[in-house]
Length: 103
Image 1 (tube, helix red, strand yellow):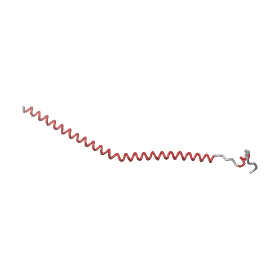
Image 2 (image 1 turned 180 degrees about the horizontal axis):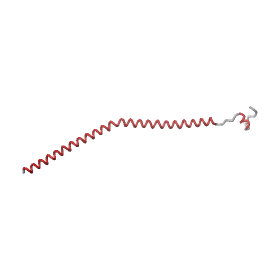
Image 3 (image 1 turned 120 degrees about the horizontal axis):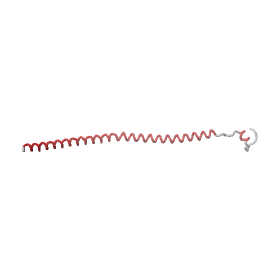
Image 4 (image 1 turned 135 degrees about the horizontal axis):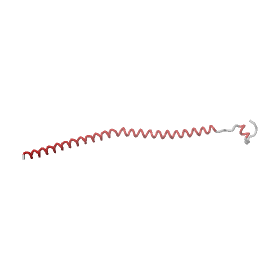
């Protein structure tokens, strides 16, 4: 019986050590989860600032593109006005306009 009691106590000791090891591992895992959560919380502010900066840049690019289209339209429109061939007084007379006589 002495031997069987020894086996039972050895088995009980092994179970205790196993349970203690599991408890220690669980505590370590919970610590890691908490640490990850803290790091996520720390990153939320910079991520928010980054999204705000990207949004601002996108709005600026949209405005720049819109302004560029408006400016190019005005330039081409104003160059159209510059390039219009306005007949001189001599050309108007030679075309038979209502004005007669020499200039």
